[in-house]
Length: 446
Ligand code: ARG
Image (cartoon, rainbow, N blue to C red; front, side):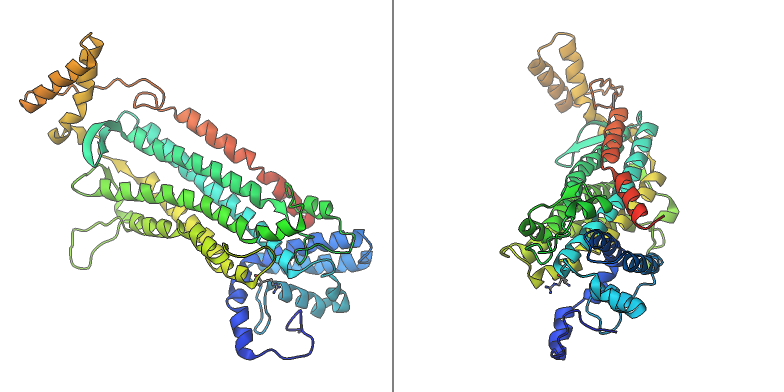
Protein backbone atom coordinates (compact mmCIF):
# COMPACT_ATOMS: atom_id res chain seq x y z
CA UNK A 1 0.00 0.00 0.00
CA UNK A 2 1.33 3.50 -0.88
CA UNK A 3 2.31 5.10 2.37
CA UNK A 4 2.32 8.79 1.48
CA UNK A 5 0.26 10.73 -1.01
CA UNK A 6 3.21 13.01 -1.56
CA UNK A 7 5.82 10.25 -1.90
CA UNK A 8 8.45 11.17 -4.49
CA UNK A 9 10.73 8.22 -3.81
CA UNK A 10 12.81 9.96 -1.20
CA UNK A 11 12.79 9.14 2.51
CA UNK A 12 11.66 11.39 5.34
CA UNK A 13 13.51 11.22 8.64
CA UNK A 14 11.61 8.88 10.99
CA UNK A 15 11.45 11.36 13.84
CA UNK A 16 10.20 14.08 11.50
CA UNK A 17 7.54 11.69 10.31
CA UNK A 18 6.46 10.75 13.84
CA UNK A 19 6.32 14.41 14.87
CA UNK A 20 4.40 15.67 11.84
CA UNK A 21 1.87 12.84 11.71
CA UNK A 22 1.38 13.37 15.43
CA UNK A 23 -2.03 12.15 16.61
CA UNK A 24 -3.64 12.28 13.16
CA UNK A 25 -4.07 8.52 12.86
CA UNK A 26 -6.18 8.60 16.01
CA UNK A 27 -7.96 11.93 15.39
CA UNK A 28 -8.79 11.26 11.75
CA UNK A 29 -10.86 8.24 12.78
CA UNK A 30 -13.55 10.74 13.76
CA UNK A 31 -13.55 11.85 10.12
CA UNK A 32 -13.59 8.50 8.26
CA UNK A 33 -17.25 8.45 7.22
CA UNK A 34 -17.15 12.09 6.20
CA UNK A 35 -13.99 11.77 4.15
CA UNK A 36 -15.76 9.05 2.19
CA UNK A 37 -18.94 11.12 1.71
CA UNK A 38 -16.86 14.07 0.53
CA UNK A 39 -15.02 11.87 -1.95
CA UNK A 40 -18.31 10.51 -3.28
CA UNK A 41 -19.53 14.02 -4.02
CA UNK A 42 -16.17 15.07 -5.46
CA UNK A 43 -15.86 12.17 -7.91
CA UNK A 44 -19.50 12.44 -8.98
CA UNK A 45 -18.66 16.01 -9.92
CA UNK A 46 -15.38 14.95 -11.59
CA UNK A 47 -17.30 12.55 -13.84
CA UNK A 48 -19.75 15.30 -14.79
CA UNK A 49 -16.90 17.49 -16.07
CA UNK A 50 -15.23 14.66 -17.94
CA UNK A 51 -12.38 13.84 -15.57
CA UNK A 52 -13.64 10.32 -14.85
CA UNK A 53 -15.37 7.72 -17.04
CA UNK A 54 -18.86 6.57 -16.11
CA UNK A 55 -17.67 3.02 -15.32
CA UNK A 56 -14.81 4.37 -13.25
CA UNK A 57 -17.26 6.45 -11.22
CA UNK A 58 -19.53 3.47 -10.70
CA UNK A 59 -16.69 1.27 -9.47
CA UNK A 60 -15.29 3.99 -7.20
CA UNK A 61 -18.69 4.82 -5.70
CA UNK A 62 -19.37 1.16 -4.93
CA UNK A 63 -16.02 0.79 -3.18
CA UNK A 64 -16.46 4.06 -1.28
CA UNK A 65 -19.82 2.79 -0.05
CA UNK A 66 -18.06 -0.29 1.31
CA UNK A 67 -15.57 1.89 3.13
CA UNK A 68 -18.40 4.05 4.47
CA UNK A 69 -20.07 0.92 5.81
CA UNK A 70 -16.82 -0.13 7.43
CA UNK A 71 -16.51 3.27 9.11
CA UNK A 72 -20.17 3.25 10.14
CA UNK A 73 -19.60 -0.10 11.85
CA UNK A 74 -16.53 1.26 13.63
CA UNK A 75 -14.18 -1.04 11.70
CA UNK A 76 -12.33 1.59 9.66
CA UNK A 77 -8.65 1.77 10.59
CA UNK A 78 -5.77 3.98 9.52
CA UNK A 79 -2.94 1.55 9.05
CA UNK A 80 0.48 1.78 10.60
CA UNK A 81 2.64 4.03 8.45
CA UNK A 82 -0.32 5.68 6.68
CA UNK A 83 -0.37 9.41 7.35
CA UNK A 84 -4.02 10.30 7.67
CA UNK A 85 -7.61 9.46 6.74
CA UNK A 86 -7.28 10.98 3.28
CA UNK A 87 -4.26 8.82 2.44
CA UNK A 88 -5.95 5.72 3.87
CA UNK A 89 -9.11 6.06 1.77
CA UNK A 90 -7.18 6.73 -1.44
CA UNK A 91 -4.84 3.83 -0.68
CA UNK A 92 -7.77 1.44 -0.09
CA UNK A 93 -9.34 2.44 -3.41
CA UNK A 94 -6.08 1.99 -5.26
CA UNK A 95 -5.45 -1.36 -3.64
CA UNK A 96 -8.91 -2.65 -4.53
CA UNK A 97 -9.51 -1.00 -7.90
CA UNK A 98 -6.04 -0.30 -9.27
CA UNK A 99 -5.01 2.90 -11.02
CA UNK A 100 -8.50 4.41 -11.06
CA UNK A 101 -8.11 4.97 -7.32
CA UNK A 102 -5.34 7.40 -8.09
CA UNK A 103 -7.68 9.58 -10.17
CA UNK A 104 -9.94 10.82 -7.39
CA UNK A 105 -7.68 13.60 -6.16
CA UNK A 106 -7.86 15.77 -9.32
CA UNK A 107 -8.91 19.31 -8.45
CA UNK A 108 -8.60 18.70 -4.74
CA UNK A 109 -6.04 19.13 -1.96
CA UNK A 110 -5.96 17.63 1.49
CA UNK A 111 -6.43 21.21 2.66
CA UNK A 112 -9.97 21.50 1.31
CA UNK A 113 -10.55 17.82 1.99
CA UNK A 114 -9.92 18.15 5.71
CA UNK A 115 -11.91 21.40 5.78
CA UNK A 116 -14.81 19.53 4.24
CA UNK A 117 -14.48 16.50 6.53
CA UNK A 118 -14.48 18.75 9.59
CA UNK A 119 -17.63 20.53 8.44
CA UNK A 120 -19.50 17.32 7.62
CA UNK A 121 -18.46 15.80 10.95
CA UNK A 122 -19.34 18.96 12.88
CA UNK A 123 -22.80 19.39 11.43
CA UNK A 124 -23.63 15.76 12.30
CA UNK A 125 -22.35 16.31 15.82
CA UNK A 126 -24.34 19.53 16.17
CA UNK A 127 -27.46 17.61 15.18
CA UNK A 128 -26.82 15.11 17.99
CA UNK A 129 -26.14 17.89 20.48
CA UNK A 130 -29.31 19.71 19.48
CA UNK A 131 -31.37 16.55 19.95
CA UNK A 132 -29.90 16.00 23.42
CA UNK A 133 -30.37 19.64 24.43
CA UNK A 134 -33.96 19.40 23.20
CA UNK A 135 -34.52 16.31 25.35
CA UNK A 136 -32.99 17.91 28.43
CA UNK A 137 -35.00 21.11 27.99
CA UNK A 138 -38.15 18.98 27.64
CA UNK A 139 -37.32 17.11 30.87
CA UNK A 140 -36.75 20.41 32.67
CA UNK A 141 -40.06 21.83 31.42
CA UNK A 142 -41.88 18.67 32.52
CA UNK A 143 -40.37 18.97 36.01
CA UNK A 144 -41.18 22.66 36.03
CA UNK A 145 -44.84 21.95 35.31
CA UNK A 146 -44.94 19.11 37.86
CA UNK A 147 -43.61 21.30 40.66
CA UNK A 148 -44.98 24.64 39.54
CA UNK A 149 -46.91 25.24 42.75
CA UNK A 150 -44.07 24.26 45.10
CA UNK A 151 -42.33 27.34 46.49
CA UNK A 152 -38.67 27.51 47.40
CA UNK A 153 -36.43 30.29 48.70
CA UNK A 154 -34.78 32.55 46.16
CA UNK A 155 -31.35 33.99 46.95
CA UNK A 156 -29.30 37.05 46.14
CA UNK A 157 -25.71 37.16 47.45
CA UNK A 158 -26.51 33.63 48.70
CA UNK A 159 -28.70 35.42 51.28
CA UNK A 160 -32.34 34.40 51.65
CA UNK A 161 -34.19 36.87 49.44
CA UNK A 162 -37.63 36.30 47.91
CA UNK A 163 -40.07 33.52 47.15
CA UNK A 164 -39.09 31.44 44.15
CA UNK A 165 -40.48 28.12 43.02
CA UNK A 166 -39.22 24.81 41.74
CA UNK A 167 -41.27 25.60 38.64
CA UNK A 168 -39.14 28.70 38.10
CA UNK A 169 -35.89 26.92 38.88
CA UNK A 170 -36.37 24.03 36.45
CA UNK A 171 -37.87 26.27 33.77
CA UNK A 172 -35.02 28.80 33.98
CA UNK A 173 -32.52 26.21 32.81
CA UNK A 174 -34.84 25.11 30.01
CA UNK A 175 -35.00 28.68 28.73
CA UNK A 176 -31.23 29.04 29.09
CA UNK A 177 -30.78 25.99 26.86
CA UNK A 178 -33.14 27.50 24.29
CA UNK A 179 -30.90 30.56 24.08
CA UNK A 180 -27.89 28.25 23.82
CA UNK A 181 -29.57 26.58 20.84
CA UNK A 182 -29.87 29.98 19.20
CA UNK A 183 -26.10 30.45 19.36
CA UNK A 184 -25.61 26.85 18.26
CA UNK A 185 -27.72 27.54 15.20
CA UNK A 186 -25.62 30.57 14.27
CA UNK A 187 -22.54 28.34 14.53
CA UNK A 188 -24.28 25.68 12.44
CA UNK A 189 -25.06 28.19 9.67
CA UNK A 190 -21.39 29.19 9.56
CA UNK A 191 -20.37 25.54 9.48
CA UNK A 192 -22.87 24.44 6.84
CA UNK A 193 -21.15 26.01 3.78
CA UNK A 194 -19.12 24.02 1.30
CA UNK A 195 -15.35 24.65 1.17
CA UNK A 196 -14.68 21.87 -1.39
CA UNK A 197 -13.09 23.19 -4.57
CA UNK A 198 -10.89 25.66 -2.75
CA UNK A 199 -8.22 22.96 -3.08
CA UNK A 200 -4.96 24.11 -1.48
CA UNK A 201 -6.62 27.46 -0.80
CA UNK A 202 -6.40 29.03 -4.26
CA UNK A 203 -8.83 27.02 -6.38
CA UNK A 204 -8.01 24.90 -9.43
CA UNK A 205 -7.61 25.19 -13.18
CA UNK A 206 -10.01 22.26 -13.63
CA UNK A 207 -13.53 23.56 -14.40
CA UNK A 208 -14.90 22.31 -11.06
CA UNK A 209 -18.65 22.49 -10.52
CA UNK A 210 -18.76 23.64 -6.92
CA UNK A 211 -22.54 24.16 -6.93
CA UNK A 212 -22.91 20.47 -7.73
CA UNK A 213 -20.89 19.26 -4.72
CA UNK A 214 -22.68 21.86 -2.57
CA UNK A 215 -26.03 20.36 -3.55
CA UNK A 216 -24.88 16.74 -3.36
CA UNK A 217 -23.71 17.24 0.22
CA UNK A 218 -26.81 19.18 1.29
CA UNK A 219 -24.96 22.36 2.24
CA UNK A 220 -26.84 25.66 2.62
CA UNK A 221 -24.38 27.19 0.15
CA UNK A 222 -20.65 27.43 -0.41
CA UNK A 223 -17.76 29.43 0.97
CA UNK A 224 -17.36 31.30 -2.32
CA UNK A 225 -13.95 32.88 -2.10
CA UNK A 226 -11.35 30.12 -2.11
CA UNK A 227 -8.96 32.09 0.10
CA UNK A 228 -11.77 32.68 2.59
CA UNK A 229 -12.76 29.00 2.43
CA UNK A 230 -9.29 28.10 3.70
CA UNK A 231 -9.47 30.90 6.29
CA UNK A 232 -12.52 29.07 7.65
CA UNK A 233 -10.23 26.41 9.12
CA UNK A 234 -10.04 27.24 12.79
CA UNK A 235 -12.72 29.90 12.48
CA UNK A 236 -15.50 27.35 12.14
CA UNK A 237 -14.10 25.31 15.04
CA UNK A 238 -13.74 28.41 17.23
CA UNK A 239 -17.29 29.53 16.44
CA UNK A 240 -18.74 26.12 17.18
CA UNK A 241 -16.49 26.05 20.25
CA UNK A 242 -18.26 29.15 21.55
CA UNK A 243 -21.62 27.47 21.02
CA UNK A 244 -20.42 24.34 22.82
CA UNK A 245 -19.15 26.56 25.63
CA UNK A 246 -22.60 28.16 25.86
CA UNK A 247 -24.35 24.85 26.51
CA UNK A 248 -21.53 23.80 28.84
CA UNK A 249 -21.91 27.00 30.88
CA UNK A 250 -25.61 26.32 31.40
CA UNK A 251 -24.85 22.76 32.49
CA UNK A 252 -22.13 23.74 34.95
CA UNK A 253 -24.33 26.37 36.59
CA UNK A 254 -27.16 23.85 36.86
CA UNK A 255 -24.73 21.29 38.27
CA UNK A 256 -23.57 23.69 40.97
CA UNK A 257 -27.16 24.55 41.93
CA UNK A 258 -27.94 20.85 42.16
CA UNK A 259 -24.92 20.12 44.38
CA UNK A 260 -25.80 23.02 46.64
CA UNK A 261 -29.52 22.28 46.86
CA UNK A 262 -28.81 18.60 47.48
CA UNK A 263 -26.64 19.40 50.51
CA UNK A 264 -28.25 18.63 53.90
CA UNK A 265 -27.94 22.32 54.83
CA UNK A 266 -30.27 23.21 51.99
CA UNK A 267 -32.26 20.00 51.59
CA UNK A 268 -34.27 21.38 48.65
CA UNK A 269 -33.92 18.41 46.32
CA UNK A 270 -33.35 14.70 46.52
CA UNK A 271 -31.58 12.48 44.03
CA UNK A 272 -32.52 8.83 43.54
CA UNK A 273 -30.14 6.71 45.66
CA UNK A 274 -28.91 4.85 42.60
CA UNK A 275 -27.75 8.12 41.05
CA UNK A 276 -25.45 8.93 43.98
CA UNK A 277 -22.10 7.52 45.08
CA UNK A 278 -20.83 6.41 48.47
CA UNK A 279 -17.78 6.95 50.64
CA UNK A 280 -15.22 4.33 51.63
CA UNK A 281 -15.18 5.56 55.23
CA UNK A 282 -18.44 7.44 55.95
CA UNK A 283 -21.29 4.96 55.75
CA UNK A 284 -24.01 7.60 55.43
CA UNK A 285 -22.74 9.35 52.29
CA UNK A 286 -24.77 9.78 49.09
CA UNK A 287 -22.70 12.11 47.00
CA UNK A 288 -23.78 13.99 43.87
CA UNK A 289 -20.62 13.03 41.94
CA UNK A 290 -22.37 13.12 38.58
CA UNK A 291 -23.06 16.82 39.01
CA UNK A 292 -19.56 17.48 40.30
CA UNK A 293 -17.97 15.77 37.29
CA UNK A 294 -20.39 17.55 34.97
CA UNK A 295 -19.38 20.87 36.52
CA UNK A 296 -15.68 20.18 35.97
CA UNK A 297 -16.06 18.75 32.47
CA UNK A 298 -18.27 21.63 31.40
CA UNK A 299 -15.91 24.19 32.89
CA UNK A 300 -13.16 22.54 30.88
CA UNK A 301 -15.32 22.70 27.75
CA UNK A 302 -15.71 26.44 28.26
CA UNK A 303 -11.97 26.73 27.61
CA UNK A 304 -12.39 25.16 24.15
CA UNK A 305 -12.80 28.39 22.13
CA UNK A 306 -9.83 29.88 23.99
CA UNK A 307 -7.70 26.82 23.25
CA UNK A 308 -8.58 27.05 19.57
CA UNK A 309 -7.80 30.76 19.56
CA UNK A 310 -4.42 30.19 21.13
CA UNK A 311 -3.55 27.64 18.45
CA UNK A 312 -4.76 29.60 15.44
CA UNK A 313 -5.14 33.28 16.28
CA UNK A 314 -1.88 34.68 15.00
CA UNK A 315 -1.77 32.82 11.69
CA UNK A 316 -1.87 34.78 8.44
CA UNK A 317 -4.13 33.58 5.62
CA UNK A 318 -3.32 30.33 3.83
CA UNK A 319 -2.88 26.80 5.14
CA UNK A 320 -0.47 25.96 7.95
CA UNK A 321 0.19 22.66 9.67
CA UNK A 322 -0.63 24.38 12.99
CA UNK A 323 -4.29 23.84 12.10
CA UNK A 324 -3.88 20.09 12.49
CA UNK A 325 -3.53 20.49 16.26
CA UNK A 326 -7.01 22.02 16.58
CA UNK A 327 -8.43 18.57 15.86
CA UNK A 328 -6.99 17.27 19.14
CA UNK A 329 -9.07 19.64 21.26
CA UNK A 330 -12.07 20.04 18.97
CA UNK A 331 -12.99 16.54 17.85
CA UNK A 332 -13.28 14.86 21.30
CA UNK A 333 -15.26 17.80 22.73
CA UNK A 334 -18.56 16.63 21.24
CA UNK A 335 -18.50 13.24 22.96
CA UNK A 336 -17.73 14.94 26.25
CA UNK A 337 -20.62 17.35 25.97
CA UNK A 338 -23.03 14.66 24.78
CA UNK A 339 -22.09 12.45 27.73
CA UNK A 340 -22.81 15.30 30.15
CA UNK A 341 -26.14 16.07 28.46
CA UNK A 342 -27.26 12.45 28.72
CA UNK A 343 -26.29 12.20 32.39
CA UNK A 344 -27.79 15.53 33.40
CA UNK A 345 -31.02 14.56 31.67
CA UNK A 346 -31.19 11.36 33.74
CA UNK A 347 -30.40 13.21 36.96
CA UNK A 348 -32.90 16.02 36.40
CA UNK A 349 -35.63 13.58 35.38
CA UNK A 350 -35.15 11.51 38.55
CA UNK A 351 -34.92 14.47 40.92
CA UNK A 352 -37.54 14.94 43.64
CA UNK A 353 -38.11 18.22 45.43
CA UNK A 354 -38.78 19.00 49.08
CA UNK A 355 -42.38 20.20 49.02
CA UNK A 356 -42.24 21.32 52.68
CA UNK A 357 -39.11 23.41 52.54
CA UNK A 358 -40.84 26.72 53.33
CA UNK A 359 -42.32 25.37 56.56
CA UNK A 360 -38.87 26.00 58.02
CA UNK A 361 -39.00 29.40 59.78
CA UNK A 362 -35.50 30.34 58.65
CA UNK A 363 -37.11 31.26 55.33
CA UNK A 364 -39.94 33.39 56.79
CA UNK A 365 -38.34 36.66 55.72
CA UNK A 366 -38.61 35.83 51.99
CA UNK A 367 -42.21 36.99 52.36
CA UNK A 368 -41.25 40.50 53.50
CA UNK A 369 -41.62 42.02 50.04
CA UNK A 370 -45.02 40.37 49.64
CA UNK A 371 -46.14 42.18 52.77
CA UNK A 372 -44.72 45.52 51.58
CA UNK A 373 -46.54 45.06 48.26
CA UNK A 374 -49.78 44.19 50.05
CA UNK A 375 -49.62 47.43 52.07
CA UNK A 376 -48.72 49.41 48.93
CA UNK A 377 -51.69 47.91 47.12
CA UNK A 378 -53.90 49.10 49.99
CA UNK A 379 -52.67 52.64 49.37
CA UNK A 380 -49.63 53.10 51.65
CA UNK A 381 -46.70 54.67 49.68
CA UNK A 382 -44.14 51.97 48.88
CA UNK A 383 -41.32 53.60 50.89
CA UNK A 384 -43.53 53.89 53.98
CA UNK A 385 -44.68 50.31 53.61
CA UNK A 386 -41.04 49.21 53.25
CA UNK A 387 -40.13 50.97 56.50
CA UNK A 388 -43.18 49.67 58.32
CA UNK A 389 -42.33 46.07 57.46
CA UNK A 390 -38.63 46.66 58.12
CA UNK A 391 -39.33 47.90 61.63
CA UNK A 392 -41.64 44.96 62.30
CA UNK A 393 -38.83 42.60 61.25
CA UNK A 394 -36.33 44.40 63.52
CA UNK A 395 -38.79 44.16 66.41
CA UNK A 396 -39.27 40.43 65.80
CA UNK A 397 -42.95 40.97 65.06
CA UNK A 398 -43.09 40.07 61.37
CA UNK A 399 -45.69 37.41 60.57
CA UNK A 400 -45.30 35.98 57.07
CA UNK A 401 -48.31 35.41 54.87
CA UNK A 402 -47.07 32.50 52.82
CA UNK A 403 -49.49 32.69 49.94
CA UNK A 404 -48.00 34.48 46.95
CA UNK A 405 -49.78 35.92 43.96
CA UNK A 406 -47.38 36.57 41.09
CA UNK A 407 -49.14 36.89 37.75
CA UNK A 408 -46.90 38.62 35.22
CA UNK A 409 -45.14 36.75 32.42
CA UNK A 410 -42.38 34.45 33.60
CA UNK A 411 -43.27 34.73 37.28
CA UNK A 412 -44.15 32.05 39.84
CA UNK A 413 -47.82 32.06 38.87
CA UNK A 414 -47.32 32.39 35.12
CA UNK A 415 -44.25 30.43 34.05
CA UNK A 416 -44.83 30.72 30.27
CA UNK A 417 -43.49 27.20 29.80
CA UNK A 418 -45.62 26.80 26.68
CA UNK A 419 -43.96 29.82 25.13
CA UNK A 420 -40.49 28.55 26.07
CA UNK A 421 -41.32 25.17 24.59
CA UNK A 422 -42.65 26.73 21.36
CA UNK A 423 -39.51 28.83 21.01
CA UNK A 424 -37.40 25.71 21.46
CA UNK A 425 -39.35 23.77 18.85
CA UNK A 426 -39.13 26.60 16.31
CA UNK A 427 -35.36 26.77 16.70
CA UNK A 428 -34.88 23.01 16.49
CA UNK A 429 -36.97 22.76 13.31
CA UNK A 430 -35.23 25.68 11.63
CA UNK A 431 -31.83 23.96 11.72
CA UNK A 432 -33.11 21.99 8.70
CA UNK A 433 -31.34 18.73 9.51
CA UNK A 434 -33.76 16.82 7.25
CA UNK A 435 -32.23 18.47 4.16
CA UNK A 436 -28.77 17.24 5.14
CA UNK A 437 -30.03 13.75 5.97
CA UNK A 438 -31.82 13.49 2.62
CA UNK A 439 -28.73 14.59 0.68
CA UNK A 440 -26.42 12.16 2.47
CA UNK A 441 -28.89 9.29 2.01
CA UNK A 442 -29.14 10.00 -1.71
CA UNK A 443 -25.36 10.17 -2.09
CA UNK A 444 -25.09 6.78 -0.39
CA UNK A 445 -27.84 5.41 -2.64
CA UNK A 446 -30.03 4.52 0.34
N1 ARG B 1 -3.43 16.43 8.58
C1 ARG B 1 -3.55 17.67 7.92
C2 ARG B 1 -4.38 18.66 8.72
O1 ARG B 1 -5.12 18.27 9.54
C3 ARG B 1 -4.20 17.46 6.59
C4 ARG B 1 -3.87 18.51 5.60
C5 ARG B 1 -2.48 18.33 5.18
N2 ARG B 1 -2.09 19.36 4.27
C6 ARG B 1 -0.80 19.71 4.10
N3 ARG B 1 -0.56 20.65 3.27
N4 ARG B 1 0.18 19.12 4.73
O2 ARG B 1 -4.23 19.84 8.55
